[in-house]
Each structure stands twice: as structure tokens, then as C-alpha cells.
Length: 422
Image (cartoon, rainbow, N blue to C red; front, side, top):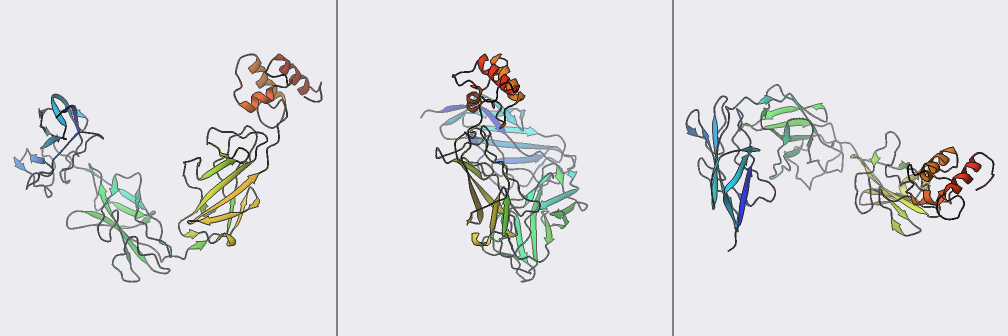
């Protein structure tokens, strides 16, 4: 059987910090053709073992804890995948640093001694973001943390999903069932979120925790695992959205479509960031004349063509779109039709065909003046060239085909009011 040599080995493992448990889950680059086996006993886990060089003893897998000032040595055994062999000259890196290793064709053993374990830095505060309970909505199991040296533990089992669990205080239900239970109006709900500090950091009794910037309580289990607990105010009824207003730049010859919708202050809806298949920010423009969707950032509006825009809106958490019969929708101040589908509201508007722009509008701003003369003069002089198809067409002031000094002369006479028309 043919085999391929493995010429480089890269492994990542959390460094020792006082109070932390050893890391037995080695990480490898994407596409690596080797792995750490699942061999385990009292000291080994995933074919990895840690030794306390200061005390001379091995750490128990799953229960050992690093002590401040102690030096630790890790041994990582690696196995090549079927069809691969380690090269005897393979370069070996641990956490981005070159290290020595015993490398054989059918296995490699990395032995590395870390500097004395330091005390991890205390975490001063953590804020977790969650959707507020609203009647009829599902609980939020996607807790979000940003800017703090910790993560939500992605643990899922029973009534815990992604490290988050909800309980109904009013209904005296210890845990809600993910994917089944909905919030009830007037009920008080409590959430718990499992937290894991980054390597080199730790929670302390002084760590302040909050949910949506409201003070919460940090608790610790008998196993040293941390989680926060927060009780929300009674769940509110979902509010219907009966009026929407969207503002977009109307089509103009030579301009690019506007994919950034604007809404009134205090609007409880938005266009999300969906950007595929001709959509950008959940907005799509269609050329009704050529019957094709426009490409964001590429296509421009053409004279004589009619365009349709469709905007998809999403209601904020705690709000909903009722049926379209109960909603008034406006685009650029004009009433338009709308539809509600899968919880989203979409509204569309067809703009009339764009009128041909007057010859001489070289910069495509809708008028002919000295600015167009400057742009055309630079093109004729070879300083900077026009590339837009509509601009090139408008620059042919004489209508003779091509662009020359004759077009520049005729445009100059028009701008100077020597001639009344182009």
C-alpha cells in the first residue's frame, strides 16, 4: 500500500495556569493527517499525560489541578492516519514554537516542559446578551459575550442547550424544554448561563456579572464550575407592527442601486445582513426591462429601463408582523403593497422607466454644466478616461460616434450659452 510522508507536525494545547485543569484535547491544523489516540487510564486521557516536575508526580486525568510556581511537563503521543507515515525529519511545533520530539514512521511523541505555572488574571466583569422574554416567543439559548476573557460553555444535555437553561419562576417549573416551551405573558423567568474563563484568566468573588447590562449573580458549583443567574421582569405580550416606512435612493441613470434602507427613529424592524443570490442586506433590485436581477456593487441603472426593488424586513424580538391586511407600508413616502411570509414582511415597488439623460451629462449627475466640461476635457486630453457606458454615450455630444475635441467644443459653447441646445 502506498503511503505519504508527513513532514510537519503542529499541535496546540492550553498552557498551565494555577487553578486550571490540564488540557487533554490537542488541536491540529485543518487537514492534518495525524491524531492523538483515545488511550486513557488514571493518568492518560486521549494519549496525553501531564507530570508535575516540582513534586515528581503525574496528574490524575480529569481531576488534577495546576499549582502556582510548579513546573509541568506534557507528553503527547500522535498516530498517523491510514495511508500516511511520519517522516523522521518532520518539523514539530507546539503552540507555534519548535520543540524536540521522538518521531518514528508509525508514531511521534512530544515531550515539553512549560515554565512555572503563573496565577491567572482575575476577570473583573462579564456582560451576557440575551433576548428579553416576550409572550409567545421561544427562550433564547444563544447567549452572546463580547469583549470579555471568557466564553459561554457550549454544553448541551437535557434542559440545557448551549450552556443556557431557563426556568419558569411563576409556574414553578425548574427547567423549560428547549424547542418546546414558549414564554407566557406575565410569568417571571430565570436564566442560568454556564461560563468558562479563557486560559490564563479566572473568576473571583469580586467578578461582576450582568445580563443585558443588568446586575446578575455569579455562582460556582462544587466542582469549581461557574455560572450566572438572572431573573427577568414578567414577560410582556408581543407587540404587533402595523405600519412600516422605508427610504431608499430612487433609481438614477448611471447610479448604483441603494442597498442600505433607512427607517424612522424608534422603528422595531430592520433588514438583516442576508447577502446571496443578488441580495444585499435582504434587499434585491430587478431590471424589469431585461428581466434580470442586478448584481450588488457591479450593475448600474440604465436609461429607458424600469426597475423593481423588494425589501425584506424582520421584526425585532418582542414584536411581530400581523397579516398584510393590517399593515400599512410606504417606500419613499409612497404607499406600496406588502406580504408577510415566514414571519418576515416584504414590500416591493416598481419605478417608472428612467428617462434618457440629456447629452453632455458626462458625470451623470442629472444636469449639464461646467463640471461635465471639466470631466470631458480630461478625457479628451488623456488625463483620466471615462469608463462608464452611459457616461461615454453622453459624452458623444455631436452624435458622430466616438469622443473628440469636437464634442468638447460643442459642450463648451452650450455651457457658455452660445448655443441653446446640444
